[in-house]
Length: 284
Image (cartoon, rainbow, N blue to C red):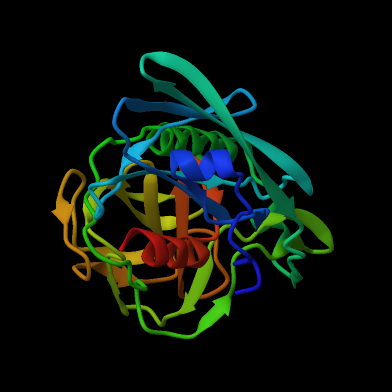
């Protein structure tokens, strides 16, 4: 993919510390990854991007490495991000800096004609949508230190992609956000499987996303499955990669049946397919 660019140009000092930033540049709405090698007398503490703190986790498959994911907000303008690695060497705290270039993904626009009632919400619906949004964000902002994953991610179903992540959504000629996931063609009743192992943290019928399942894969990584017609899992269950979690449908605010598949990293909405490719290429 175009947003997978050259490996970072790292300084000789960074090489001596064994810190690798695998994306020298990344588009808005995408994710970058940084890997840190274990060293004697060296302790990695955190990563700072401005005032935002990123947690450093144990690598799920390589005992000699730590890693952190850097999700880029969809609305982030092209810029150069300062990434500070805070660590202690022989008990002395130090900071090493790398720079990550954010580029414009140049997402396409998508015009959709819907009934006025589908765009303008009544007071009752607004309250429900707001309540459900707050509930979801409280989930996404929680980061489980444990990783449930031990192998590569897979697609939630084998089907044609009808709408990719990032398209600007124009409803009745009015710009109204962007497409926050990837849509798979799926008639009502098509089986949906877990993209990877994890803990089910949400099973609920919601106003916008309809029948919704959210899986926590650990270490700030979540996958979401929306507009479902049937659930085959319950909140709190541990599911394995490829396990049936339910059936597709046309519930919620949709114009037809399909599966909306999305992902969150450290609370940030990101391109799910790019995230999966990034993780599969670097963690396993």
